[in-house]
Image (cartoon, rainbow, N blue to C red):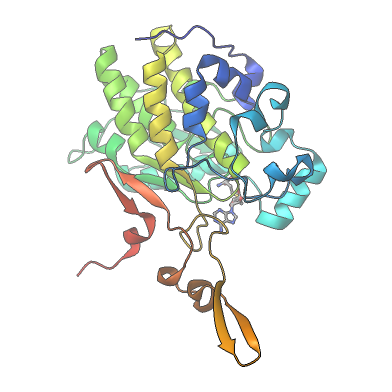
Length: 333
Ligand SMILES: C[S@@+](CC[C@H](N)C(=O)[O-])C[C@H]1O[C@@H](n2cnc3c(N)ncnc32)[C@H](O)[C@@H]1O
């Protein structure tokens, strides 16, 4: 296994992961993080915020490594580092308002209250903060820790994915130590830490945890940040546990899962953003051709099943088969 030679993790990197550093770790890693598993191409910008940088930064263009590394290495910034003007435009265009960590925590606690049928399992919320339960997590009689790490979770419209991982508060940029993290994946990783003894066992269960966590987002820059946050969460927990860096092969395996599970989608249509097109019908008349543009039927009728755009595919890791995200909603007979 190749070992990881370059990893300049500093405090700043907790909040704003540098694409140049990912590239220094390994070119393939950034390549994987930019992949769109549905189209086989790269994720697209899906925002016009970068169009002034050139036509290749248009909303429908793919995000490429060259566009975000080298001297362009500062282009992708988390919301807290964007200018006020940019932040306001993103609120107007895509309702981009992020949720403070303490609210994510309270909502994640509600999900766990229901799963455990018990309250304050991971922490006790306390106004705009929380106090972490330092004892080993115990499980209900009819459920095991394996059930917990395998239970599926999805953050809809995930932005930078604050409900899944919590390296920093996406509203203030304040960093959060590993022991106090509150994301849905953080909780699974804590459970893995508490129940595994050797590295193989730990890693195998961490892989299962990543496979059970999903999220989707419209805007390509936020989606990439969400993916980076999940990858760097793996690095954080690995270093904390083993006092050494993960191997390139391990990083690639985790990045591959992330590139499937954290995906770009219009959550109202279940297709790649802006992929629905007007169908052009040509009528030949005595006076020549007449072009008639018909709006996508799904968009026109607001019917999920009739879009002519590209329906997003996700991976079912139990069967290792791809499936349309839309099929999750089809009624079982
Ligand atoms: C209110 S923010 C929430 C982000 C994150 N979940 C949080 O709580 O901080 C809403 C997010 O939804 C995304 N969004 C807006 N319309 C969307 C759509 N139709 N499909 C998917 N994501 C969408 C925006 O880009 C934005 O990141």
